[in-house]
Amino acid sequence: MSSSSASVLGSYQRTITVVALILIVLIFSFTGMRRAVWVELYDVFLWMETTPFGVIGKTWGAVFAVVEAFHLLAMALIGGAVFVSDFRLLGWGFKDIPAQEVLDKAHKVFVWALIVVLATGIFMACGVAGKIYWLPVFWYKMLALATGILFVFFVKRPLLKGNIDEINPTVIRLVATSSMMLWVTVAATGRWIGFAGS
Amino acid sequence: MNNARNDGKTKKKMDDKQLSAVAISVTVVVFFVIYWAAQIQTTYALLSSAYGW
Image (cartoon, rainbow over all chains, first blue to last red; front, side, top):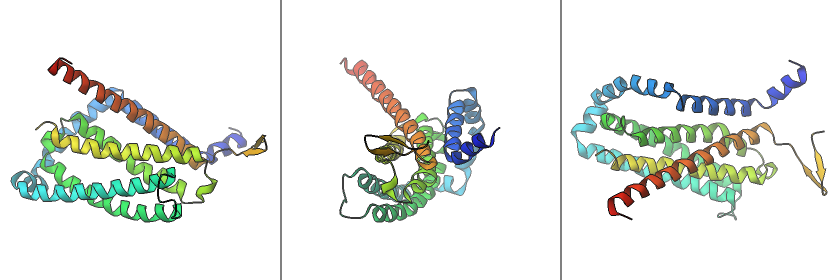
């Protein structure tokens, strides 16, 4: 490999990693690997129901409901943080406040809300592990959630940390649109789990 | 040459962060448009078979 092609690979390391990850997820999704992993995970989900979280969640509906309330409130916070920052990026609102200020403050809210969502989500998943394992929508939610978290911390934040004026406006619009799409899907599929399979 | 002049404007090459953002954003938009279109279509098919729409 020549030194010039090596330097091109070096300067586009992040892009190469992202494309490689996308290809890995696609190969995983459209081959027998996905089914094999899903079958292997059945014992994990059975075990989740036997943990203290699982027992409490299954035995006391009131505890599950209170935890779910915090889960939904935190999801609302995430939605707010995402929409505020993405609306600012699209120029649809908060134009009188510097974009960087909106993004930084929204990100702080997002991080705390995400911690609550994950903690309460794990508790709730343990309580209904035997149900959600069989729901395709649960796996789509996990795919959207994992993509959303990686997207925020490894793509969106690093991109928008610098001077936003130097970024191509089309890229900013694309990032904001896909960000909203991801988190709306996380919220919608989450509510769908509540209605499905009961 | 990295920069190309066009009508007095300078088009810069996208850097690594922007290019990776485009790659994942396009994938996300395409994937979820297909996903939600399929969901809407199956819901419509279910409703039409249930109510004879």
